[in-house]
Length: 258
Image 1 (tube, rainbow, N blue to C red):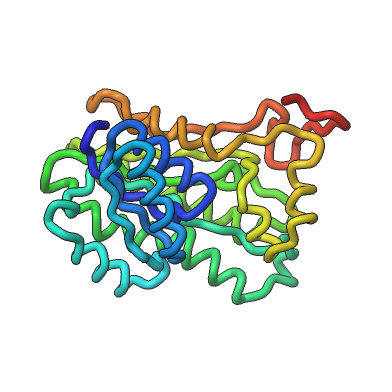
Image 2 (image 1 turned 120 degrees about the vertical axis):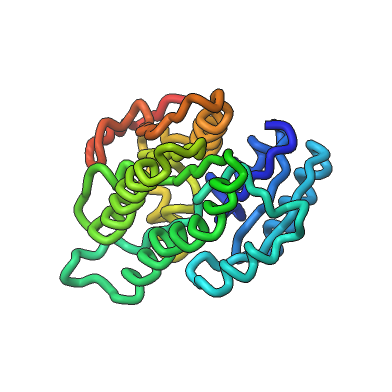
Protein backbone atom coordinates (compact mmCIF):
# COMPACT_ATOMS: atom_id res chain seq x y z
CA UNK A 1 0.00 0.00 0.00
CA UNK A 2 3.06 2.24 0.33
CA UNK A 3 2.62 5.48 -1.66
CA UNK A 4 -0.53 4.31 -3.45
CA UNK A 5 -3.00 7.15 -3.97
CA UNK A 6 -6.29 6.36 -2.24
CA UNK A 7 -9.34 8.60 -2.75
CA UNK A 8 -12.01 8.23 -0.06
CA UNK A 9 -15.40 9.96 -0.23
CA UNK A 10 -17.43 10.82 2.85
CA UNK A 11 -14.44 10.48 5.16
CA UNK A 12 -15.28 13.18 7.71
CA UNK A 13 -16.73 10.55 10.08
CA UNK A 14 -17.58 6.88 10.54
CA UNK A 15 -16.34 4.24 8.12
CA UNK A 16 -14.71 6.78 5.81
CA UNK A 17 -12.67 8.24 8.65
CA UNK A 18 -11.69 4.75 9.83
CA UNK A 19 -10.60 3.91 6.26
CA UNK A 20 -8.44 7.03 6.18
CA UNK A 21 -6.67 5.90 9.35
CA UNK A 22 -6.23 2.32 8.13
CA UNK A 23 -4.74 3.32 4.80
CA UNK A 24 -2.60 6.04 6.36
CA UNK A 25 -1.12 3.46 8.70
CA UNK A 26 -0.36 1.34 5.63
CA UNK A 27 1.63 4.19 4.07
CA UNK A 28 -0.85 5.27 1.40
CA UNK A 29 -1.18 8.81 0.08
CA UNK A 30 -4.71 10.01 0.81
CA UNK A 31 -7.18 12.24 -0.98
CA UNK A 32 -9.77 12.91 1.71
CA UNK A 33 -13.13 14.04 0.34
CA UNK A 34 -16.16 15.37 2.20
CA UNK A 35 -18.42 18.40 2.31
CA UNK A 36 -17.28 19.31 5.84
CA UNK A 37 -13.87 20.66 4.89
CA UNK A 38 -12.97 21.68 8.44
CA UNK A 39 -13.31 18.07 9.57
CA UNK A 40 -11.12 16.60 6.85
CA UNK A 41 -8.51 19.30 7.31
CA UNK A 42 -8.37 18.39 11.01
CA UNK A 43 -8.19 14.70 10.09
CA UNK A 44 -5.41 15.41 7.60
CA UNK A 45 -3.38 17.09 10.32
CA UNK A 46 -3.92 14.16 12.67
CA UNK A 47 -2.76 11.66 10.06
CA UNK A 48 0.27 13.74 9.21
CA UNK A 49 1.22 14.01 12.88
CA UNK A 50 0.58 10.35 13.71
CA UNK A 51 1.67 8.51 10.56
CA UNK A 52 3.63 11.18 8.64
CA UNK A 53 1.07 10.70 5.87
CA UNK A 54 0.84 12.69 2.66
CA UNK A 55 -2.73 13.97 2.59
CA UNK A 56 -4.74 16.10 0.16
CA UNK A 57 -8.01 17.39 1.74
CA UNK A 58 -10.68 18.07 -0.88
CA UNK A 59 -14.06 19.69 -0.32
CA UNK A 60 -16.39 17.57 -2.44
CA UNK A 61 -20.16 17.34 -2.83
CA UNK A 62 -20.62 14.02 -4.63
CA UNK A 63 -24.22 14.90 -5.57
CA UNK A 64 -23.07 17.72 -7.87
CA UNK A 65 -21.81 16.21 -11.12
CA UNK A 66 -20.24 19.43 -12.38
CA UNK A 67 -18.45 20.05 -9.09
CA UNK A 68 -17.20 16.45 -8.99
CA UNK A 69 -15.81 16.64 -12.53
CA UNK A 70 -14.16 20.02 -11.92
CA UNK A 71 -12.65 19.04 -8.57
CA UNK A 72 -11.31 15.65 -9.63
CA UNK A 73 -9.99 16.64 -13.04
CA UNK A 74 -8.37 19.64 -11.35
CA UNK A 75 -6.27 17.58 -8.94
CA UNK A 76 -2.55 18.47 -9.00
CA UNK A 77 -0.55 16.15 -11.31
CA UNK A 78 1.11 14.43 -8.37
CA UNK A 79 -2.32 13.48 -6.99
CA UNK A 80 -4.21 12.69 -10.20
CA UNK A 81 -3.26 9.03 -10.68
CA UNK A 82 -5.72 7.49 -8.22
CA UNK A 83 -4.91 3.85 -7.47
CA UNK A 84 -7.81 3.02 -5.15
CA UNK A 85 -11.24 4.67 -5.06
CA UNK A 86 -13.38 4.05 -1.98
CA UNK A 87 -16.95 5.17 -2.65
CA UNK A 88 -18.02 5.52 0.95
CA UNK A 89 -20.26 8.62 0.89
CA UNK A 90 -23.84 7.64 1.68
CA UNK A 91 -26.73 8.17 4.07
CA UNK A 92 -30.23 7.20 5.05
CA UNK A 93 -33.16 9.40 6.02
CA UNK A 94 -35.97 8.23 8.29
CA UNK A 95 -37.99 5.02 8.45
CA UNK A 96 -41.22 6.22 6.87
CA UNK A 97 -43.47 3.84 5.02
CA UNK A 98 -43.30 4.25 1.25
CA UNK A 99 -46.70 5.93 1.03
CA UNK A 100 -45.65 8.42 3.71
CA UNK A 101 -42.12 9.11 2.49
CA UNK A 102 -40.82 12.63 1.93
CA UNK A 103 -39.64 13.27 -1.62
CA UNK A 104 -36.77 15.37 -0.32
CA UNK A 105 -35.50 12.41 1.72
CA UNK A 106 -35.80 10.11 -1.30
CA UNK A 107 -33.87 12.49 -3.51
CA UNK A 108 -31.12 13.00 -0.93
CA UNK A 109 -30.55 9.24 -0.64
CA UNK A 110 -30.68 8.62 -4.38
CA UNK A 111 -28.46 11.60 -5.19
CA UNK A 112 -25.82 10.62 -2.64
CA UNK A 113 -25.89 6.83 -2.60
CA UNK A 114 -26.32 6.19 -6.31
CA UNK A 115 -25.59 9.31 -8.34
CA UNK A 116 -22.66 10.35 -6.16
CA UNK A 117 -21.03 6.96 -6.63
CA UNK A 118 -21.62 7.17 -10.39
CA UNK A 119 -20.28 10.71 -10.77
CA UNK A 120 -17.04 10.03 -8.88
CA UNK A 121 -16.38 6.65 -10.48
CA UNK A 122 -17.04 7.98 -13.99
CA UNK A 123 -14.30 10.58 -13.57
CA UNK A 124 -11.71 8.38 -11.86
CA UNK A 125 -12.15 5.06 -13.70
CA UNK A 126 -10.85 5.96 -17.20
CA UNK A 127 -7.47 6.90 -15.71
CA UNK A 128 -7.23 3.54 -13.96
CA UNK A 129 -7.95 1.73 -17.22
CA UNK A 130 -5.41 3.82 -19.11
CA UNK A 131 -2.68 3.24 -16.50
CA UNK A 132 -3.43 -0.48 -16.36
CA UNK A 133 -4.18 -0.78 -12.65
CA UNK A 134 -6.72 0.36 -10.10
CA UNK A 135 -9.37 -0.74 -7.65
CA UNK A 136 -12.90 0.58 -7.09
CA UNK A 137 -14.35 -0.31 -3.68
CA UNK A 138 -18.01 0.51 -3.07
CA UNK A 139 -19.54 0.66 0.39
CA UNK A 140 -22.81 -1.23 0.12
CA UNK A 141 -25.00 -2.66 2.86
CA UNK A 142 -26.89 -5.69 4.03
CA UNK A 143 -29.86 -3.49 3.07
CA UNK A 144 -28.88 -4.07 -0.56
CA UNK A 145 -29.52 -7.79 -0.09
CA UNK A 146 -32.53 -7.75 2.26
CA UNK A 147 -35.22 -5.13 2.73
CA UNK A 148 -36.78 -4.19 6.05
CA UNK A 149 -39.90 -2.22 7.07
CA UNK A 150 -39.41 1.49 6.43
CA UNK A 151 -36.15 0.89 4.58
CA UNK A 152 -37.73 1.09 1.10
CA UNK A 153 -35.70 3.78 -0.72
CA UNK A 154 -32.50 3.30 1.26
CA UNK A 155 -32.61 -0.45 0.54
CA UNK A 156 -33.24 0.30 -3.12
CA UNK A 157 -30.20 2.57 -3.31
CA UNK A 158 -27.95 -0.06 -1.75
CA UNK A 159 -29.36 -2.74 -4.04
CA UNK A 160 -28.37 -0.42 -6.87
CA UNK A 161 -24.82 -0.21 -5.48
CA UNK A 162 -24.62 -4.02 -5.45
CA UNK A 163 -25.93 -4.33 -9.02
CA UNK A 164 -23.74 -1.50 -10.31
CA UNK A 165 -20.68 -3.16 -8.77
CA UNK A 166 -21.53 -6.41 -10.53
CA UNK A 167 -22.10 -4.61 -13.83
CA UNK A 168 -18.85 -2.67 -13.45
CA UNK A 169 -16.91 -5.90 -12.91
CA UNK A 170 -18.40 -7.25 -16.13
CA UNK A 171 -17.62 -4.10 -18.11
CA UNK A 172 -14.02 -4.14 -16.84
CA UNK A 173 -13.38 -7.76 -17.76
CA UNK A 174 -10.14 -7.85 -19.72
CA UNK A 175 -8.63 -4.94 -17.80
CA UNK A 176 -6.54 -5.21 -14.61
CA UNK A 177 -8.94 -2.93 -12.69
CA UNK A 178 -10.57 -4.63 -9.70
CA UNK A 179 -14.04 -3.97 -8.26
CA UNK A 180 -15.32 -4.78 -4.78
CA UNK A 181 -18.41 -4.14 -2.72
CA UNK A 182 -18.26 -4.40 1.08
CA UNK A 183 -21.75 -4.78 2.54
CA UNK A 184 -22.01 -4.48 6.33
CA UNK A 185 -24.99 -4.99 8.60
CA UNK A 186 -25.36 -2.93 11.77
CA UNK A 187 -22.38 -0.61 12.28
CA UNK A 188 -22.44 1.85 15.19
CA UNK A 189 -21.45 5.20 13.67
CA UNK A 190 -23.22 8.52 13.02
CA UNK A 191 -25.39 6.66 10.47
CA UNK A 192 -28.48 6.39 12.67
CA UNK A 193 -28.02 9.92 14.05
CA UNK A 194 -28.14 11.17 10.47
CA UNK A 195 -31.10 8.92 9.66
CA UNK A 196 -33.07 10.39 12.56
CA UNK A 197 -31.84 13.95 11.97
CA UNK A 198 -29.86 14.35 15.17
CA UNK A 199 -32.09 12.36 17.53
CA UNK A 200 -29.25 10.72 19.49
CA UNK A 201 -31.55 8.85 21.86
CA UNK A 202 -33.51 7.21 19.05
CA UNK A 203 -30.28 6.41 17.21
CA UNK A 204 -28.86 4.66 20.29
CA UNK A 205 -31.89 2.35 20.41
CA UNK A 206 -30.84 0.85 17.05
CA UNK A 207 -27.81 -0.75 18.74
CA UNK A 208 -29.36 -1.36 22.16
CA UNK A 209 -28.72 -4.76 23.74
CA UNK A 210 -26.33 -6.01 21.05
CA UNK A 211 -22.72 -5.58 19.97
CA UNK A 212 -22.64 -3.85 16.59
CA UNK A 213 -19.77 -3.72 14.13
CA UNK A 214 -17.44 -0.75 14.48
CA UNK A 215 -16.25 1.54 11.72
CA UNK A 216 -12.80 0.05 12.26
CA UNK A 217 -14.13 -3.47 11.62
CA UNK A 218 -15.38 -2.40 8.20
CA UNK A 219 -12.26 -0.36 7.40
CA UNK A 220 -10.03 -3.35 8.17
CA UNK A 221 -12.11 -5.47 5.78
CA UNK A 222 -11.84 -2.83 3.05
CA UNK A 223 -8.08 -2.62 3.59
CA UNK A 224 -7.82 -6.41 3.35
CA UNK A 225 -9.65 -6.40 0.01
CA UNK A 226 -7.43 -3.62 -1.34
CA UNK A 227 -4.18 -5.25 -0.22
CA UNK A 228 -4.62 -8.62 -1.95
CA UNK A 229 -2.27 -9.54 -4.82
CA UNK A 230 -3.16 -7.99 -8.17
CA UNK A 231 -4.60 -11.25 -9.54
CA UNK A 232 -7.06 -11.57 -6.63
CA UNK A 233 -10.38 -9.71 -6.81
CA UNK A 234 -12.61 -10.05 -3.75
CA UNK A 235 -15.82 -9.12 -5.48
CA UNK A 236 -18.25 -9.03 -2.57
CA UNK A 237 -18.05 -9.14 1.22
CA UNK A 238 -21.25 -9.45 3.28
CA UNK A 239 -20.45 -8.90 6.96
CA UNK A 240 -22.62 -8.72 10.06
CA UNK A 241 -22.18 -8.62 13.82
CA UNK A 242 -22.39 -12.02 15.49
CA UNK A 243 -25.58 -10.69 17.11
CA UNK A 244 -27.21 -10.25 13.69
CA UNK A 245 -28.29 -12.86 11.15
CA UNK A 246 -30.46 -10.77 8.83
CA UNK A 247 -31.85 -7.30 8.21
CA UNK A 248 -34.56 -7.79 10.86
CA UNK A 249 -32.96 -10.59 12.90
CA UNK A 250 -30.95 -9.18 15.80
CA UNK A 251 -30.26 -10.84 19.13
CA UNK A 252 -30.61 -8.33 21.94
CA UNK A 253 -29.87 -8.90 25.62
CA UNK A 254 -29.73 -6.85 28.78
CA UNK A 255 -25.94 -6.98 29.03
CA UNK A 256 -24.28 -6.90 25.56
CA UNK A 257 -21.03 -8.81 25.20
CA UNK A 258 -17.86 -6.66 25.11
